Every structure is written in structure tokens, then in C-alpha cells.
Length: 121
Image (cartoon, rainbow, N blue to C red; front, side, top):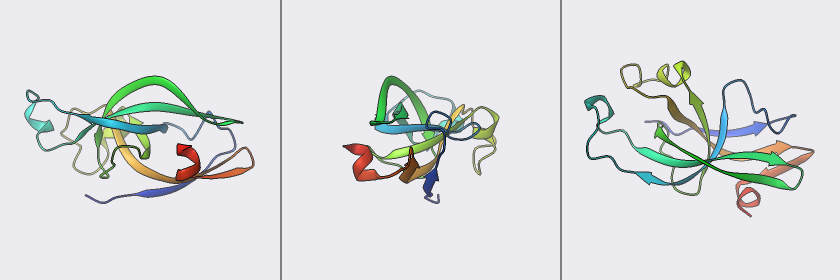
């Protein structure tokens, strides 16, 4: 699978783009029993994020996503849901509703450019 890095620009920090969700990978989910179409797919636990004038806001809301780009723990990612998740290559026959489609390198918002290091602080 290809890894995607995204330099994301945003004028409204709560609305990234139609259908994209900003999150941070917290860990991996392992399911010994699952439907056959999920075999070989990495499941990651993510925390949904928002941005405010003071920086990243950790929402304490979590979800499990299928990883399409090779993201790892601690990385900031972009997620799509619903039919957008099933349009990605190799996902057409996978019962997925949340898919990690990008790894964020930096964010430009509120007149600031935040790198991954600044986002993590």
C-alpha cells in the first residue's frame, strides 16, 4: 500500500473539508474473530481532534479505523467515512465505514503553520 502525506491548509479549524476527519492514532486494535474480508487489514484506534486558537483539542472521542496508508501510533491522520471509505483501492469489497487515507505533516490554520512536532506538544 502507498503512504500518503498531506500538507493540510484550513481556514475554518473545525471544518477540514467535506467528509474528512482529523485524528491521532492511539494504538492498534486486534480482532481474532472478524469477517473474512477484513483479514490482513490493520485496525487502528484513533482519537478525534479539533483545532482552536491555542492548538490541538483532544476530544476524548475514539473510533477504530481500517488503515490504508501505513500509519503508526502517535501520527496525525485524515479519515473518511461511509461510501468514501469504500471507494479507496482494495476496499470495494471490505465492510469498512472509517478509513485512514492520509498522514498529516503539518496544518496551516488560524494564521499559524503547525508542524507534527508542534501538534504533538
